[in-house]
Length: 349
Image 1 (tube, one colour):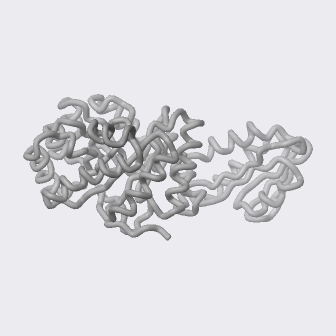
Image 2 (tube, one colour; image 1 turned 180 degrees about the vertical axis):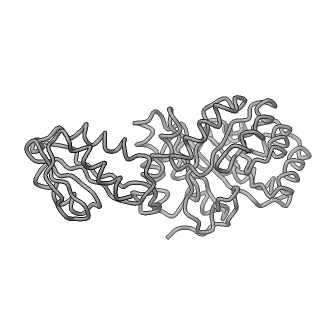
Image 3 (spheres, helix red, strand yellow; image 1 turned 120 degrees about the horizontal axis):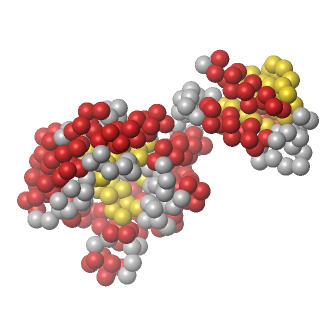
């Protein structure tokens, strides 16, 4: 049972309140380089990203946001730390959301100015607690970034906004350790009904980070926790989006894009299946249609999996059977398997 949270709007994307868990990423470009940033945002949008965040380290970056917002095909969030003037300029530039911890902004009047400007524009604020930047007093109290320490930090930031009458709030609470992340989000979910942005921060490179994110986010989502998500990987942010959708698809929460099925290969496999599977996945990656494509390599499990898929191949000795919606279309030589399957999928879109 998914937890019911309040709903906010990030641009035209509903977050919380029963809306589908949305997929976010963050640009790795220099925000001051508008062309490079918009180029990356375009690639993220093509992969299915729904909300994008940009770092705002200085006023030049804040000033660049207006042009980025004008050219972005998706809602834009400004990532702000310490300087309230950057938040004000980002709001003037038309951003759809702020990532900002009010406790780090300084005097309360500065926070009040940001909140007033955000409220006037109906722009939500995400409080983002990270285990690597926890307040010193909480580290003294708890010894290290425990789940309880991070929840206390988040609730402290929430209290500041609530005291200013502001409740368009989204919260994230992340560490790089999966078990601590799980416990922190469980505690936070019990304490508030604000929408939660989930992620395992600094998860690692694409292999290790995908594993950690899949375990952590998969468990949270399966327990009904999470209204929007980011998979944090060291690499191309487009890969973050692809992994996020695969996590959501594996749990039946989103259906965008191809459900790709392929066998791990074993001694029964009589075709060179790995390059075939990789080529088919690469050539169909751009599709956002909801279909299942199977690439199977032997006569034991292959025909059954390929028959259950919308499109599939099942390998034999130097050849394979091509399936469409459960029916065999023809035999295909091994060298033509990838081409035959891709062509069959594309002509039926």
